[in-house]
Amino acid sequence: MRKTWWKESVVYQVYWRSFLDTDGDGYGDLRGVIEKLDYIQNLGADVIWLNPFYVSPDKDNGYDIADYYSIMPKAGTMEDFDELLAEAKKRGLRIIMDLVVNHTSNEHPWFIESKSSKDNPKRDWYIWRDGKDGNPPNNWRSYFWPSTWEYDKVTGQYYFHSFAVEQPDLNWENKELRNAIYNMMHFWLKKGIDGFRLDAIALLSKPAGFPDAEVPEHIGYLANNPGVHDYLQEMNREVFNHYDALTVGEVAFVSPEEGLKYVDESRGELNTLFHFEVCDEMPEWDLKRFKDIQKRWYQGLWGKGWNSQFLNNHDHTRLVTRYGNDGKYRVESAKLFAAMLHTLPGMPYIYQGEEIGMTGVRFETIDDYQDIAMKNRYLELTSNGVDPDEVLKLLQPLSRDNSRTPMHWDSSPNAGFTKGSPWLKVNPNYREINVEKALEDKNSIFYFYQKLIKLRKSHPVFVYGDYQPIQEARNEIYVYKRKHEQESLLYVGNFSESVQEINVEAEFDLTGAELLLTNYKGSETHGSILRLNPYEARVYLK
Image 1: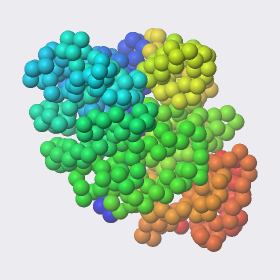
Image 2: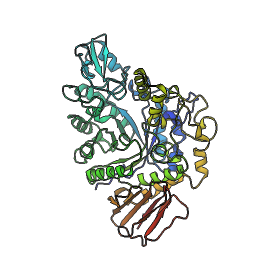
Image 3: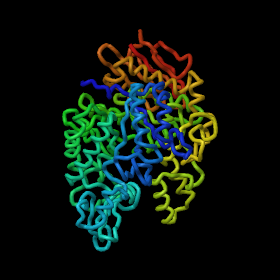
Image 4: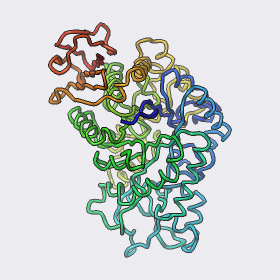
């Protein structure tokens, strides 16, 4: 297996608008990231993934880009970014940027030109179609709105948008458009960034002929269409192949077999990918299902391509609330999941606040939410006569704002995030859950993550070991071993609120094994019968 720096890295995701505000406008900014570089370095992460900070009308929190070459004033200036790059490199930290090339803002100059007339040179940089009998060209549904089509009165045609109406999709069949994108990628890589997280990259190619969907609500037809791999191989040849960069693709609706096409090292596309069989398709914790997902993806990718391990990000509810126990066992369950994510095959991602066990939130009214996907769905359902209180209750658990509330730095007003009025309300539990308290407690979730990252850097088996699940039929217990050269690792986790017993001696002889890490004090370190407390995790090495 080819060894690379990025396979051995741990990524820390910074949702900058909720990270730290240094100018009092209520939004986090790049200077806030600079101020907290020592914190990220102390945690032990190697790579910082920054969500989009390009110039944008901000209809979808920066994922609607109006200028690929400039910095959003809310985030700061190009000088701030250059300083961030320099200061990160001083600390041995790498920066990857979120890049959106499936669509732009409808305020991007390219789209303004495209919509100005049917014969504009940039008309074909976007996707335009005639309507059908006074209706949109087909019955497709977008991620954020009932239709993927928006009518333009000036030219009498519809334009295509996979997401919000303010986010028209680019036409990747146009070579001139592709070259413009590649030139922009070179601009940032030459600046010194270390790669890209590529948003919605599986959507670049559209179904030929744009036929009606049999079930419009099942929007998998938007992704993984013929041609997408041609575009990515060209992108690799034209751009990525010239740099030692990390490329991470956001790839929805994908199986291990299809996913391998994106990351197979022999194909020349991307380094690794996010798949969403867990975060999109498993609304509540289901250990049996999770084990199956891990096994299939390991078998599909091992020795050929690299996986990513994550259970929350800016689009998904915080893991301790969604999958763990954010009440009595918040600390224990947070550590249990952390130990699992950092010992499974693939690259672990930490979403800001995950390392202190931040939880999801339930605001009282829809007005307190900013998530455009949630607000659009709320409007659609209430307009169809569904009771507003019921709609709110339905949408709250998986609202993207669950993970977007400001970072908890301390117990001062607004959790130390801002001296102004925060763009999104702070979770009320910030006085109990914050960085200041975590750093004062040597048994905190933070220091557990720190230990995990140190172990990963000290023992190659964490990175390059194979994966062998043990006693797969157990619904409360997850056990697997990994082996690399002379090292063997064993992970044992109890994903229930009751005490569980397990005999692992037959498959992993604990004689001479070292208990590297556990989330309970006084945990047993020997014997064939392991008695596991609620949400207990153990990591052994021999």
